[in-house]
Length: 252
Image (cartoon, rainbow, N blue to C red; front, side, top):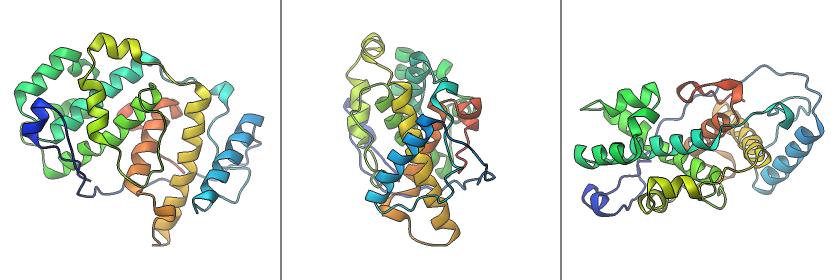
């Protein structure tokens, strides 16, 4: 990306710009299945494919494969899980900017961050001298933070995944709220809303995978890195294969 803030400005207020690219995570293409879709699966697919065609994204031809689970079988993350994840991602993103120990420690004290980090995040958090690649990877998690803020109702909609999110605006949301206010204002979106976005990003990611395999440009002007982050985040939100944050796969 890399969405570096000015560290001096960060301490007072947060601002950003977007630069270096992150390496794309390779997808694993799942075996084709002969699925008889439920009504909500079929309707969700129809809606997603219409959106893809509108944006010049190829769609998967097999109408009996490539589905998210039906709504009746999905149990989404709780509001508490999602708020904890958002706070963890905020911390990881800010550390990737090179924020000093003191403001990071204050953030940890304010939100009890260390208790919310995944094992991989905790390892990064305690590393005194992370590599440049570690910082780039952590910096991309701002896109995941954006998804969590959308899922909690702080962001109105997820824009087309072609341009990086407005990191300054996202960080400002949390900066301007106490922990109590953040938890009180957070309203988790419905299962249908989460599944609609998860289904859409699944199809966009399938198209990105096809483009990479064929060495073509990304379709519809999407960013493969943003698509990967969004797919990872949405799969976590819908508990895809009940995988923990560090282990979430983005199969297509």
